[in-house]
Structure formats: C-alpha cells, structure tokens
Amino acid sequence: MTVLADQLKGGLEAPICLTWELTYACNLDCVHCLSSSGRRDPNELTTAEAKAVLDELAAMQVFYINIGGGEPMIRRDFFELIEYSIGLGIGVKFSTNGAFINAEKARQLAALDYLDIQISLDGTDAATNDHVRGTGSYDTAIAAMSHLRDAGFEDFKISVVVTRHNVDQLDEFKALADSFGATLRVTRLRPSGRGADSWHELHPTNAQQRQIYDWLLANGDNVLTGDSFFHLNALGEQPLPGLNLCGAGRVVCLIDPVGDVYACPFVIHDRFKAGSVREPRGFAGVWRESDLFVELREPQSAGACASCGSYDACQGGCMAAKFFTGLPLDGPDPECVGGEGEVELAKVQMSTVPRPSLDHSKPVRVAAPRVPVALTRR
Amino acid sequence: MLHRALRLDPQVALRDEPFGALAYHYGNRKLVFLRHPDVVEVVRSLDEHDCVADTLTACSIDERRWDAFETAIHSMYESEMLSDRAG
Image (tube, rainbow over all chains, first blue to last red; front, side, top):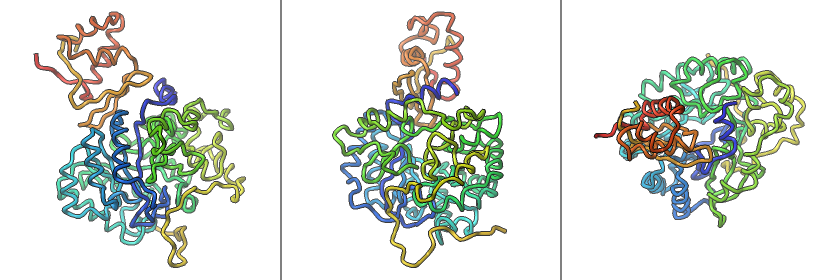
C-alpha cells in the first residue's frame, strides 16, 4: 500500500471521479445495466436543480464529471447542461449508446472543448454485442462512431464491459478503437442493477481473469480501465496501472437522476445512499459529512482476508460485487483469483442476497427472459 | 531545471487537499497529486520569481531537499503541468 493510497483512503475535499446519471430513461434494455434503467423517473432533477448542482460542483473545484444514465442524450436539456458545465470549468465525459448521435449532433459535440465521449460496445460483432445490449445496438454504436469520426471528434472512447463472451475479443476491440482514432476503455462487469440477474452467466471464468490480467499488463498503458480490475493484482508481482483501492465514498461517488448520492455507481441501494443533493446541506455537505462517507473513509477491516498474503495486492476487491452476491463486505470478492470467493458463494442462501433498491426497467411485454440465453461463439 | 523560468500552465487548476493538492490539466486531462504542502507553495510561487532556485529560496526550502524538489518539478514539467515562461 503506497502512502498516496493511504492518504486517499481518508477522503478528499471533493471527489475526483464523480458519476452523474442524468436520467433513468433509456432506449435500450441491457441485461447488465448497473442502474436498471428504462423508464424516466418523474422525480428527476429539473434543469434548474441540475444547474444548481453544477454551480456547487464548480465551487468545490470538481475538475470533471462523468455523465451517464440511462441514456443521457434522451434528456431534452442535455446540451444545455453539458454546455453549462463546460462553461463553469467542469469538463464532461459522457457515456452513451450512440442512438442519438447523428451527423448533426456529432458536429455539435465536436465543437465543444473539454468534452469526452464514451460509446458503449460489448462485442466486436453484432451477435456478441447484441446478446447483452439488445438487437440492433451494435449497428447503432458503429454508426455513432462513424459520425463522430466524420465530424472530426478526436479521441473518443469505446467503452467495453468485459464478459465471458467478449474476453477473447480484446485485441479486436483495440484494433477497432485504433481504426477510429479512438481509445479503448475496458471495465469490470458488476452484479449491480439488472447485472444482479445476469452476472452469474456473464462474468469471466477464473481462467479468463488470468487472460484479462495478462492482456492488461501487455496493453494497459494505452487502454483505460477506470482502475476497475485491481482485484486481479493478486495474480502476480506486477500491479496493473492505476490506483489500487476501492474509491467508493473516498475519491468516487454517484449522483443518481433524482439527486440521491451513493458511494459509487455500482451500489444503487439504500445501504450505500449517503444523502441527496436536495438536502439543505447540498452535495458538498453530503460528500464531506454524511455518516456513510465518514464510515467508508475509516480504516476497513480485512476480515476473513486478513490472513491471506495477497490482501495488500487486491485490497479484498470490490464492495459492490460482494454486496450484490450476498458476500460479507470484509471477506473475499466473488471473483477472488485465489478461488476464495467461489467457496463463499456456494454457501450463500439466495433468499438473503440484497436486491437493488430501485428498478426503472421497462415493463416486460413478452415473457422474455432477463438472463441471456447461452451463446456459443465461433 | 533549477535555473529555468517556469509557471503553472494556464490550463492547470489546483485544488487544495489534506495531503497537499490535486493538479488537473484541462488540455491533456492529466491529474497529478502534489503530495506535500511545500510543493504546493513552490508551484504556486514559481510565477513570482526569476527561476526555480529563487522560488525555492523564497519559500525557505532547505537545500538538502532541493534534489527532491527538482525531481518533482521536472516530472510536472514533463506532464505539461508546468511550462516555460518568457523572460
């Protein structure tokens, strides 16, 4: 553990990595959606409320925000809000499925400074991608990327959630990103939101985790990861690039579409709700004083992992992954590379596993299974 | 490096933190941790002195620490957090 990581554990004056989900509305219905998005919530922040939050973030000197959803471009005030943010000196990175990026919007986006775009894509072919993101979503994403490239938008990001089915495509994703002049971003699948139901079928196998670790060691300097694979550091002597710690409530937090503040984007659950931007103390008060965030900044117990020689390397893994698979927070990650997580998972009574607190999924019209059917590649 | 005239790049914002400060470069999106309040003071004062050495003197930095400061300043210069200043 470095001195810096220790200092960061005590928390910061303002978050480094603030995610703001602008709306729960989404045109897609991805099986691993972290926020169980689909339908807009009637209580979502108004334009005026959102601007007041941005004013507050500017006063706290938040350098940039990560905007997501749902599909953030569905909000009618989307451009108004990102332009307001950039005008205040808060850079914007936003995640989109690309459905609302046509040639005209691409030019509008390319004209903005301090703006990064992440297009979500979970397969380098339609079959693999659409299996989790829905029919037609591959073509939509590729079309959006083409519009951005044609508009001269430099260095957008292609954002991939690594699953059992696309882990063999990492080289192909990199080549695809290179062909667009884009940067590849790969992140870890979490059992959050609708992912709680699809995780068991989608998460990489233990052998595939080694594959991801080796690939990141070889390619990590040119690939973004959101530092999300630190649990893999127990696989070898050489740590992956990035901060090796759970940033929840310390350097990271989430503002959801109705203004509730959670410890990270992967824990939309009452247990990890710190407060709301609508409280009189505002976002700054929640960030600095909420009971939950103060608790998360205290030294955490290694618990069942204390006797494991790899704890310094993996830090016990991801809090959200443990919580939504029913594992104790002071024990191994469900994807512990030492196999401890699998042992613990086998003991979990499914009826005791916490469910996500909110669900904005669209009503199921047909009896379509939420869990994807088995898929065989090649 | 000690005799260069440097400044905090105009595209960089500094935010005070319990350990020192965070520096963010809006152009290249790099985030750098300034991990001691003395480093923060030196970086903030570069603009007011003819060169880095004068800044270190003015900030009362013990000469035994100058090597470490030069390394830190060089690293910030490499990541474009600091830039050359005319004159």
